[in-house]
Length: 254
Image 1 (tube, helix red, strand yellow):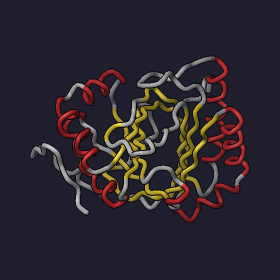
Image 2 (cartoon, rainbow, N blue to C red):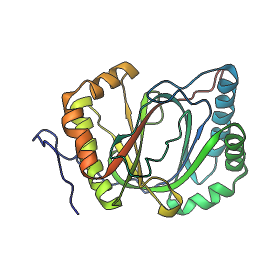
Image 3 (tube, rainbow, N blue to C red):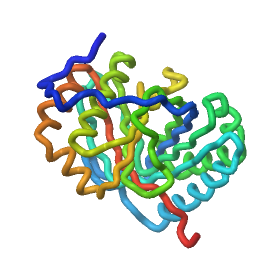
């Protein structure tokens, strides 16, 4: 079934795609200090900062494995309510506060990484200090351009759910095209779960801006097309998008 666009405009065309990287992905996310209901900025305290430092150090150990290309730790900068369709039983809750993305050389390398001591230590620490810990194994299904995780920026994880995964993947191209036009986004990956039954999401989108948090928010929520095109198009196609914005965690004093 093809995507239905609400109030389409010629400038909102699907994002041009390139060859997806052959990598595998391990995405871990957890709630540590959730904000109050609705949009907001997750809490900060000394214990949380120390925990993020330890997770980043463990991610560096993971990155030293032969099967791993890079491992990144993110702290949430802002969360927002679900956008688009609200299923009868409600949208899944997207974990926020902290996320880890481990990129392996191929999806076949993921089991070896999961058996590694460094990965088990990192996951155990998340499970001990967090709640609602979610683990996703994935491959890249679609790519606009790879996301630069070597330097700081404002990173987006878009947790997507919908009745038809194929329609969600097609709709992501239109969603990313809107972001390119309205916010200047020039990179994005669409991660597809390797085990759909084990994931509460049909896909996870990932992208990066060289923008401040207020600047990115203004370019999204300040556009009339967000309310006339983006939100109703998601609803029309029975798709929910849960955006969480992050910054990279950098080790202090290193």
